[in-house]
Image (cartoon, rainbow, N blue to C red; front, side, top):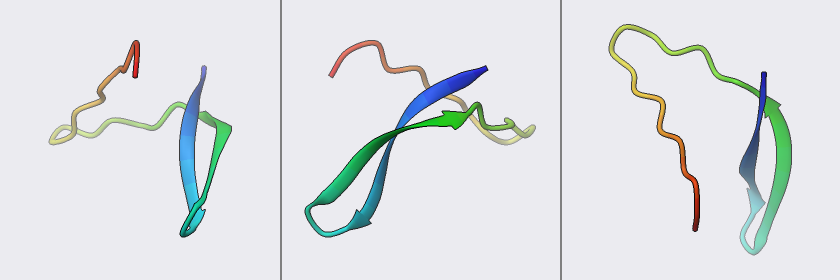
Amino acid sequence: MKNQAAVLYAPHDVRMEERPMPQVGPNDVLVEVKAV
């Protein structure tokens, strides 16, 4: 499964990329954002 991620490369340079779904550990939380 893949998701869209906003990746910061430099100041004023933010790009949307398709990334693999991160692995969630026992002390982690995965948050789904439906709208911005």
